[in-house]
Amino acid sequence: MRHPELLIPASSLEVLKIAVIFGADAVYIGGEAFGLRAKAKNFSLEDMKEGVAFAHAHNVKVYVTANILAHNSDLDGVRKYFEELKGVNPDALIISDPGVFMIAKEVLPEMELHISTQANNTNYGTYLFWKAQGAKRVVSARELSLQEIKEIRAHIPDDLEIESFIHGAMCISYSGRCLLSNYFTGRDANQGACTHPCRWKYSIVEETRPGEYMPVYENERGTYIFNSKDLCMIEHVPDLLEAGIDSLKIEGRMKTALYVATVARTYRKAIDDYQLDPKRYEANMEWYREEIGKCTYREFTTGFFYGKPDETTQIYDNNTYIKNYTYLGIVGQQDENGYYSLEQRNKFCVGERIEVMKPNGENIEAVVQGIYDEDYNPMESAPHPKQLLHIDLGMQLDQYDILRRREEE
Image 1 (cartoon, rainbow, N blue to C red):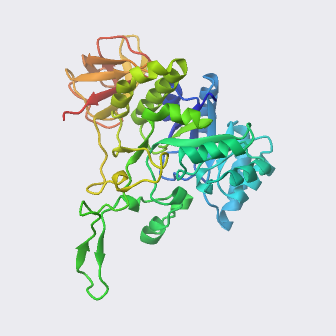
Image 2 (cartoon, rainbow, N blue to C red; image 1 turned 60 degrees about the vertical axis):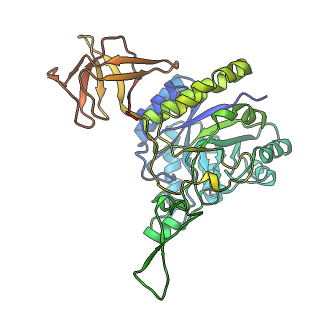
């Protein structure tokens, strides 16, 4: 059985560091162009350099996405961008477009190249094609079952790696190749600007009755007819490992540090527990379920892994996330007064009970003893987003601990 890589998304340098500290084997990021998450904060070249150096210091790899479906006007820019990446030293590029792939081979001949899920990789013939072109890894289409992935593994060379999404948002269109956003808003999902119209509420208008809106029903449950549940395979780690998958990938380059830390830590522990002792994995299942439910999500499904999804994999009555915890911030360094720096992400108050989330799996309850502004003036609460603070929780903390607050049910 292969030892799988845990591959975690990062939307910014801050989130990359959290992914590394909370258990990633590898992190994938986007630059300021040519990735499929144009609305993410993304990385400047300087941030990329710092992120790669930080990850490599912790023996973690970094992959850079360049997975748009390129148009003629993109190609000169792609070439220039790849020239700039020579000074960044990532471990691989993730590419979907054959033209972009050829430019990468020319400009970065020593770079490891991975084929994005956007390339519709649904059979072993496709894997063999990309192997012949020089690809090291191919990301499976999300429409594949575990049985199909096993068949691919049996028909490809041992050194060609399989990467598969195992957690996160699901796209309604085939391998993410969607035109809804283009038609409705003029923003191209295949160039990183998706407006997520699959999450919208729909009505219909009959052409002879303009202005008369009629609701769309699916089994009379609601009108969010394209709104998929989120993928979650935390209860099926043994099946993923037995399928021969080399890299277990988490979706979420638009997500917060709290989401990334929660998912990375939970899957890290589940994978390690199972490989240490399958009975340990079974014994800790309730902890995995509880922890994975502490990040925002849209209810869970196993996607296509055990056959084609049915009507139970959709959410019909709303498009909102379930949110059980609020992200308060990441603990910084300790100062000479014994306080810790923090950039506030949501309001919290002195006397409030919160939770300290540690990379090793511990969750420690704490009461906020003191909040101070940058000049150490005491404050009763921290109401201003991204305000720089000093905090006292009456306990020892570590840099990169995450603070969160459980929301009342």
